[in-house]
Image (cartoon, rainbow, N blue to C red; front, side):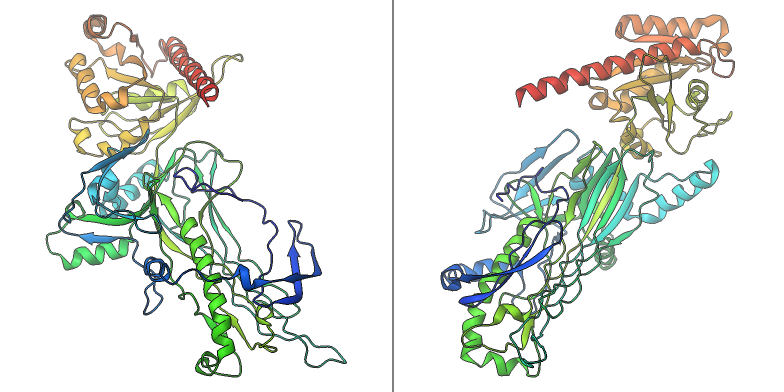
Length: 586
């Protein structure tokens, strides 16, 4: 099967395991076991000439190849990143890559090597705040954790929109050293099976009412494969892990948080904003991840003799040359799979099948593979390949048709309670809402319901991360329309609207429908504030509609719902047209 490894191809759907041929390092007649998707097995005989199939590559390629895969001394993995306190010098100009959600600028440090990787350097803040959020502040966990606990206690619900998750795929099981036995043949040919492959880690986007990441664990570890058995029985496959996330989650690779904290503890006065991150990436902007394990030709398990005894034999040296080629193929496959998009993976659509994030290690070969003319009773096998460990930042951006935006105590929560069944906390003081809330509004039977997200109040300087601005502005980015809630009992509602427009910014306002809801209409003296706000809109934003309401009394709520529904329906129709155009273009 031919695979194309692009950024959006790196994450692959879960597939049924197909035919897997058992590989032998002998020439002539041998047993061959074939696995089928329905797990049935049968044995057949065939002639296999491996002299040509396992012809080693020229030695000139091996040092360069191995240097990128493993440390020659210990088999430890290369680091996935290198930290710098100053930006390394480079002869290449900066490069900017972007998609609909994220923009990242990096500086190339090297040209492409033989396996297609280049070293790239970028600022730590640039990697995380390229999406206009200071998401990397999650590494300073104490402040955010205290705020989340306080908000959960006050509002009696848990809401988490940033979560660091450690993922570990399973190790491959070891091969088995075994020989066929029966009543009349006490010593038969080798029949040790392979170790089972380690479990994989998958992501699945679901729509089952999840609006928070608080249900995610801090670590997910897939099960290792089991050791093979006699009678050519492979070990049991490691159990996979499937992580369910709500729609709207953004997943990004991050360095090991513990290592970052250790590094900062050694550097007094240093913060994450002062650091630079060096990584290896391919031409399709995928970060290359590295796993540990043995070097090609190593990783043997010997029975009844030590390693030096076997390695001194000519027959083992000849066999190991072919095994080196097989190990290189295995490691090459790991290199192709162990990637993650530099811009992250946007879980904006519900998935029917899970997507592969980390692949488990391959099981080690049993001794049935090593029967040759010179080796009649191989008492050795191979250990399984290790899994891979990586850390990821999960960032939730609520997906709602409309987003409520307003200053503290503008009446957003009261409005949401009046138009939907959502029950956010309300009060006469500022900052009543500490966590985002999503409400569903049902209109008529011939129209689809729509959703509205209520985020905590925005203060002046929110776009500069004052208050909790950047932590909550992310939740209106995916909204198709914005509803600005302006309190008419304010001294100057026009100034309040201009402040909100400035903090939200043109980028978040682009291509969005807008509705102005003037709350607390019963507290406005003679309607002067409402008329001044309406006149301002007629002069500067004639396409925007405005509606006055009194949420506690339910006055004008039906008209407000009707206007919101019109905005939601227009947006859905535009999205459908864009989808049709896209499908025709492709």
